[in-house]
Image (spheres, one colour):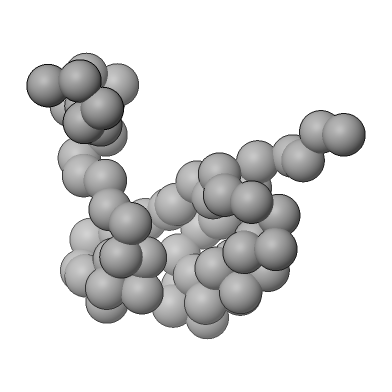
Length: 61
């Protein structure tokens, strides 16, 4: 469907916009944060505190 993410197409197991719930799941080895820059720090810090590897999009501008 148009406008729906297709995680399996790109080799991802899952996608979510509920990032706090994602960090509570077992088996998450890493996350890629590609959000507006003001969300990078809180999301990255929470992921690292949960023991999850973090990749962060570089903000261009």
